[in-house]
Image (cartoon, rainbow, N blue to C red; front, side, top):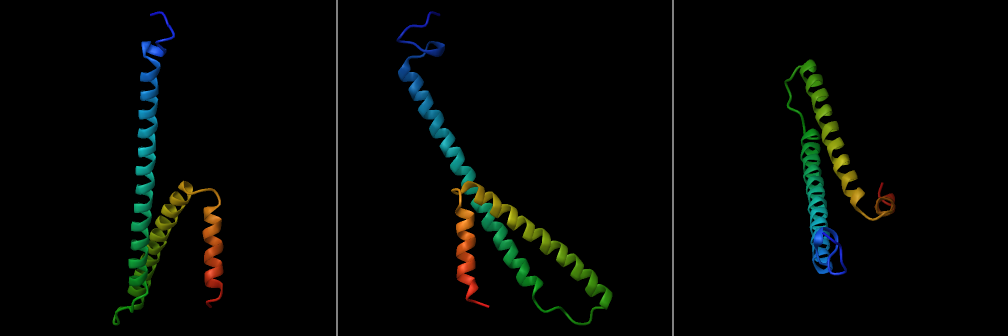
Length: 119
């Protein structure tokens, strides 16, 4: 097919090409928004898991268990706690990757300033 002023690639009119381009751009933006939302949801769930397990980990231990049982349980709980913490960090890093450049540093500075007076 001969290309003319009224048709572009694949014989489409310029208006049709602009429409397709707009639709693709909108679809891509919606997809990015879904990904951002999913990262925040993953982060929120990881934070809740961390808090729940940290509270459990710091709760009083039942008495009457042997020293070996206590050490075995403590090792297992430490391993779980480390995994939950790693999941939280991974989810947080995924969120920071979607934020504006420098946002992570700004959050860090805010936390340091806010908590430096509390010891």
